[in-house]
Length: 134
Image 1: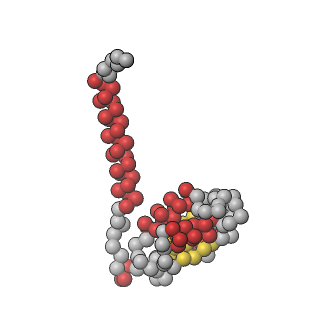
Image 2: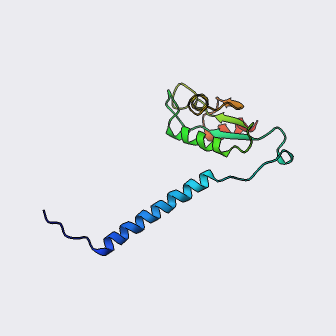
Image 3: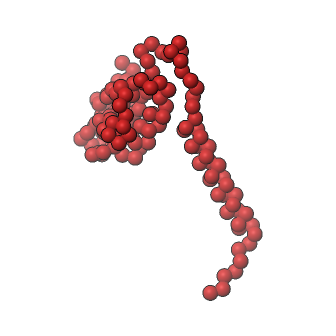
């Protein structure tokens, strides 16, 4: 079968689209992996650093895609090795609280061994915030 050659503008447009998508992915990756600066003992907050991860409605029996993504972002955000990880989320969409699903994923799949606190009673973002702020 004979194929007509594609116009030069077509290939230029394809190259531009690929370049823009590559630049966007690189910017996203860089932003999510950048270091926020060093923390020394003098600049540490009383009680230590806490990283809070809010859950997303999850059917279970394992942590879903959104909760896994949020958890990985939370773990990357820790600046101190002994940071407390606070997981917040009740049983909204399934029988197991979102915080427990994320804790299983963090300790089992990601090998997290640091301090961990679970808040399992909240059923909305506002309840997450109120419960964690106490």
